[in-house]
Amino acid sequence: MANNKLGLVLLLLGAMAVMARANIAEFDDYWRERESTARKLAEEAYHPEPEEVTDEINLHVTKALEGFNSTRRQLKKYTGPCDATNPIDRCWRCRRNWQKERKRLARCVKGFGRRTTGGLRGRFYVVTDPSDNNVASPKRGTLRHAVIQKGPLWIYFARDMVIRLKQELIVTSHKTIDGRGAQVHIAYGAGITIQYVHNVILHGLKIHDIVGAKGGLIRDSVDHVGFRTESDGDGISIFGSSNVWLDHLSMRSCQDGLIDVIMGSTAVTVSNSHFTHHNDVMLFGASDSYQGDKIMQVTVAFNHFGQGLVQRMPRCRWGFVHVVNNDYTHWLMYAIGGTSNPTIISQGNRFIAPNNAAAKEVIKRDYVSEDVWKNWTWRSEGDLMMNGAFFKSSGRRLARKFKKGDLIKPKPGTYAKRLTRFAGALNCRPRKPC
Image 1: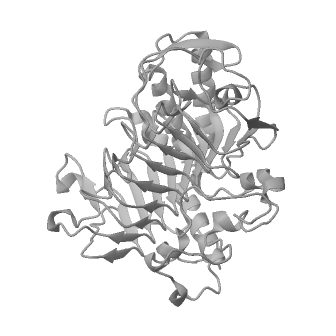
Image 2: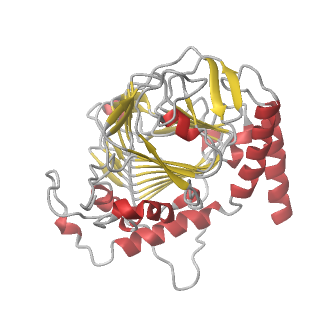
């Protein structure tokens, strides 16, 4: 069985060699090597028993909430002392010396991206200059100069700043972009591209009003400048990459999607983030024809899907997606959708349907009849359905992977509001708990 699964992975990864080159105008030796390395790392990151990972995060949630009385939930904005309400935040938040312990964050990721460490093993780099005037030869002290450096790097910001990217920001492997301690906006320009790389953390950023850029010569590493075609206007594009963690982001109003996870990307966690005012929120899986996304494994946990959202939270093709303990308070069409037989496990979320009687169903299976989708594994467990929301489960029931004595169910959707209370970029200041 293990050999068969490995063979499937190798077959799917082999398909990546013929995929679209996404904005790379000249696929030269540098990009061929980067693609080849990314494929090998994706193979290593793929988990052959994904339900073991879903069980693991549920166990951490249960431990984080031990002793909590669910009647303590508050309707008003929280103004009390620091209160870390989920297992990721409990790992690092509410520590007065967080600024001197920035790299502690790398210990805290859960879900499929759990092995992501970003720039843990590297030095610090302080961004002092918000400009982005020369994308082919970035100025020292800018974010673009930081993300192309060799080796691991932990990047943070000297002060509040708005960074308007002239072209897409191409991030190299083993980087953390840490917005804590400043209000950092990536806005009114191009977005962030995580392409053919490994081990990246984005934390504490406000990403909004992203537009497409015309392309051109862009430095994508210290040793290489490549020609890029026009970018789509995604807030964050994860393309052929593995071990990526997006945490405590605030995102809205991008020209295309807020987050794409496509073209063989895997081992990704999206957590503690706040999404508002957008149509196509998240796309997981590039197309119905690209089976290389069968290795995709994504955790979506502790996020708040808020005002002004329409659809795709996420929209999935192929792969395995665990949607756990999120708060869905707004959508206009549907919350979670997909095609091409993805596995979608929805656990402990709160879904508040819109008043539109035609949009009460949480999910949408596109372009197929029931005799096809009835075999897709789309399961709802412990979700809280409000204002008429409903979820039509299909496919097989989950096989429990807990060891004997650890049969702990995920926390129900009644806890979702508390678990997501501090979603989005935090106002972390020196010598004060976040």
